Image (cartoon, rainbow, N blue to C red; front, top):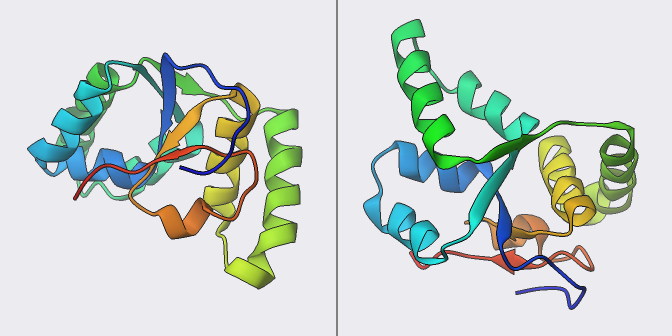
Length: 137
């Protein structure tokens, strides 16, 4: 885990990669998430990334139903998240190669003061104040 700032121990932001594993039937990832016994929030951009990977309207309907059962809340992108995401991207793109969407997901976790559950520690480990939870593979 990275970061020593205060956090709400009852809610987590979940990265796209974790949800993709669950949607693909990786029961160990789902079990890990459920074992934490915490509420789940996702960024609006996570929802859009999931939708982008869907191949048909039928699959979209199924995936949206699964997402609704997993995520308690979708955190909308606001001006504060946009500004912090921009700062994160500007600071870390050239040195660590952080992506635009990962910048927004990190900003969402930081501004909601929640831990970020991700399978991609290397995408976020350099961001001060961001606490990571990495499911066991």
